[in-house]
Amino acid sequence: KLLRVLQEGYLDKIGSKKTIKSNFRIICATNRDIDSLLDQNHFRLDLFYRINALSIRVPPLRERREDIPLLSNHFIREFNRKYDLQIKGIAEEAMQVFLSYTWPGNVRELKNEIGRACCFSKGEIIGLDCFSHRLLNRRRSRGIKIQDNFSRKEILNSAEKALILEALKKTGGNKAKASKLLGLSRTMLYKKIKALNIAL
Image 1 (tube, rainbow, N blue to C red):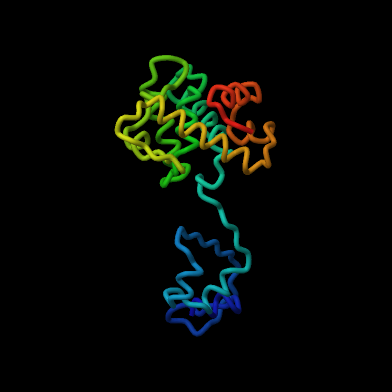
Image 2: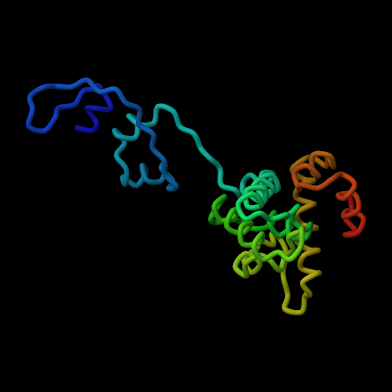
C-alpha cells in the first residue's frame, strides 16, 4: 500500500471503498550506508527508487574540518547569550586538537564540548583543560606514533605539524588557502611553519 501511495498518489482508507487522492511530500534520512543495505538486500529496491527522487549527502564533521572554527564560534556566541558569559574564543592549541579529532558524534558532540568548556572556563579564552577527557584521549594523531615518554607539548607539536602539512598538501602548497582551512591567520601559519621546522 505504501508503494502504491508513493507511486500513484492514491490511498484507500481502512473500512472504506473510497479512493482518496493524496497530496504530500516525504523526506527520509539515514545514517546508514544505503548502497550497502541495497547490496545486502536489507532495504527494498523498489521502495528506494520511489523515495530517492532527490538525494542529498550531508558529510560528517570530520570531512569538513574547515567548518569547525566557524561552528565553534557560533556555539560560543549561543552559550554566551544563554548563560550570560563573556567567552571570546578558543585557545590555539585547543583548536588544533579540535581539528585533529574525528568527531564521531558530529556537530552535536562539538556543541556539547563547547557548552561544557564555556561553563568550566575561568577566563575569556577556552583552554585545553576545559574539554572532556574523552575528547583529549581520543583525538586523532594521523601519521604520528605517540610514545609513552612524549610530553604533551611534543604530542601537540607533532599533531600540529601533521595538520599543517596535510593542509598544505590539500591546497597545493598555497599558504593563504591552507591558513583558511586551518582557521589561522597567514602570519600565524608562517610563524608555526618556522617554529615547527616544516620544510617547504
